Image 1 (spheres, rainbow, N blue to C red):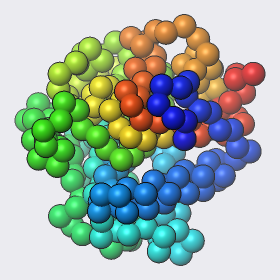
Image 2 (tube, protein in one colour; image 1 turned 135 degrees about the horizontal axis):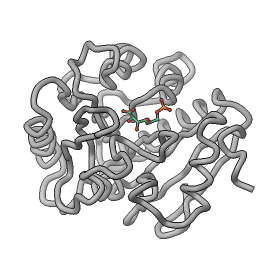
Image 3 (cartoon, protein in one colour; image 1 turned 90 degrees about the horizontal axis):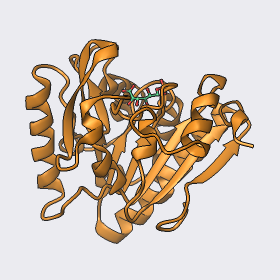
Image 4 (tube, protein in one colour; image 1 turned 90 degrees about the vertical axis):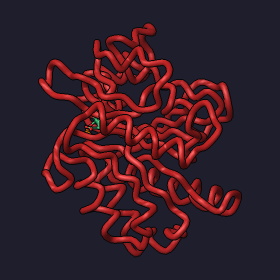
Length: 248
Ligand code: 6PG
């Protein structure tokens, strides 16, 4: 991971499988360091499809026993406005691939509610975060995992949506016109205050956008992933060759 204030570190690998293994290794390393230093490890998981393999690996014999799960606190970076057992739920995906397969205490799973009113759920989640991270301006997660959509969104910070301009709240209910749906999401400053941020991006479908996000002009309204600028932490982009095609 790059130290504070430097440009994002980009690591390119042959395949998505390699990206998943490297991401799992980073998770293990950061978890060990945080658990030893503070007795706990706080991580916000990404949704979507890219992280699935990483989560499966973390629950596998190869990685599971390298994490002190009793000290792990699992959060969500964002959630779709569906019940937790819905196929589109990010919690459902994380539960199926990881949470149900490792001994993390149930009280350490801080589920972001998708069911019900998005605004109320955002306030509820922020209350939970402020209890977990008391007396700080922004939450200092040990690790936040992120993906990037082919439109440049991350978490549920979609192009040209209200939450992009949120500068006070830690969690927002974000109306996404193109989805005709609300999403609940950590805000950009809340994400940027993490100690470690890992983007995992794979596939040719992301190549053009990744090049714009990392190499193009600063245009966060249209490329919200550019909003993620660590205030004091480290950031690394783990990408496969297909997604990195535009990054000469
Ligand atoms: C979500 C995620 C979202 C995701 C990107 C990439 O709720 O969908 O939080 O930000 O990371 O859409 O998704 P894929 O990994 O499926 O390409």
